[in-house]
Image 1: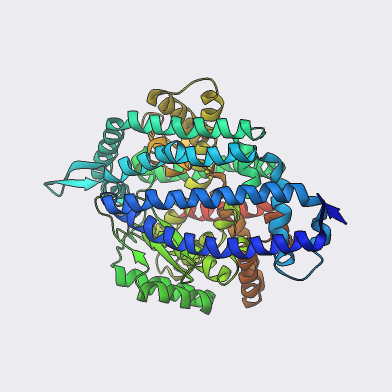
Image 2: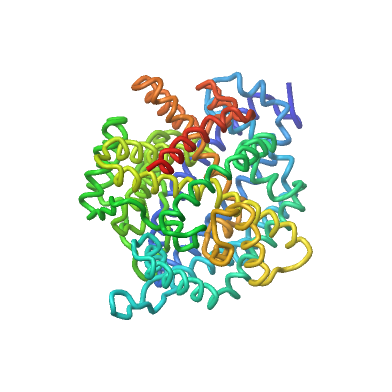
Length: 553
């Protein structure tokens, strides 16, 4: 059997050789990239880090070109794949990757066009994305805190939304909106640039729309996504019940935006960093010794950049450093229970990396829908353990508030972000949008999803400006994977409660397989069918039970 004059043996040798060299190159590149990106994310003022980032991007383009050439070639020889995959060796070990590559090869432009697109991305969508990151990380606000005017990084100002002082929260909210307004024009230009580039690329590659590419990257189909969002919309009344109950505790009919993250209950405990470390390790240890050991390594070896400062990106993330089989975590820890949960969340990503360690890079490629599985599991572990330990109703109320506040963001706010991005793409096809356009769309989406749980007078029209997910050049709709992850992880936790320690090994095996199977295939190992609403509804019911308890307390 031959393809273009080459035998199966010859083609297999070519595939095996590429896979071995590609894995080696990706391992080295990803390790160097992690180091450089860590420097940029923690100090956007560093000219040296930015220069190295730019130099490394050129290397990334070369790798991207090689990957495009290989994908194109696999598309040509895909008729030989069944024969190739019968032979022992790298090709058979990468069977899932090769089949997926063959399937996706249909959405490639010509090789010269793909090469040009990769080069232009550096000064196009990637440059717009970097502009957004620089503007946001360097934005500071003069703010009166405890009677003293201080220049706060925007991330530190946003952390004040967790204060028990409503006056402080409202002032911080108003100052934040004013700050975003001051930089709204360059950020609108950046968003137009990123989305405009995405539209051009998906059209040229024969995609139906930007969501088409996102779904394939996430390894799910539209039926699954439609089912997920249908169940999420069904759940809005549950979350509005929670929001209205919280508003009632504040003597209001509806929450203002600055109330969304406000603490409730009397467990307004603040954690020093050593206290947070002990708290997390104890909870992880009760679940899985391997998870506890991983977290202990992270804490003892200073894998985590802890607090906010000027020039450091807001939010939190975890990155894999494959060259040393470790992870690095950025967070903006402020001592709140919510931030403790965030640290646990990011250590979930680190644990996922640990489960994938020592696998070739091309077999680690995890879709965003599964990338949140371990992080959501960690959050659930910490929350449920803390809830079980609560000695007083007011303590339980505070923990429930943290959990439901986060779930509200992942189900309700994520829905608003998805609807927002969908409309932006639809309108960007015809023309650029202004900052006012983006604000108007965002407010309309928030009204549609939050409903009577949130005051229409006090929403957050600049959510589009600072959420980095909108500005990722090669992945549109980085919002629904969080909802998928929350409900998928909640379903897995329910299985853990039923199965006990037996579940843990299966769970670790799932995390180790996320680069070699679809979410539907992995879910089926636990008897879940993600294309049916019953699975997602079962996870919503778990959240609904917590809402019921919250209202009763």
